[in-house]
Amino acid sequence: MKCITRYMIGVFPSSYDEFPWHCHYEDGLYLSKKHRVCMWKGKEAIFSTKEEAIDFFNLWKNPRNFNYELIEFEN
Image (cartoon, rainbow, N blue to C red; front, side, top):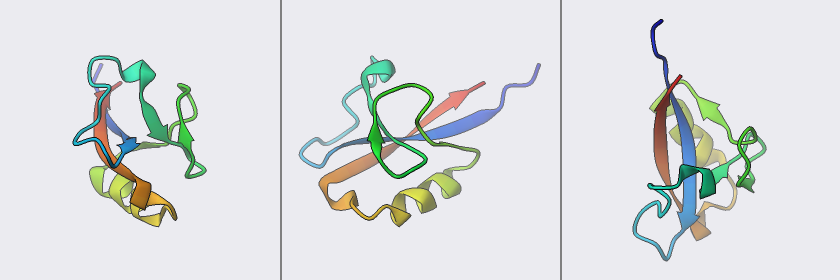
């Protein structure tokens, strides 16, 4: 079975230098399909390419309070 790489947008307050939940991804904050910050698994937006994820983040109307990091995973 071939693994497919997917991306989520991890968001964090702009007062942090990096995504603070690297050791505990389940506790992280993510951008949902409705451009809302969410914590629950299943509500986060998932993308097939990095470019698609970055474009989605840039369409968000309130990014100035948050930074983002692309979280790569395989399924």
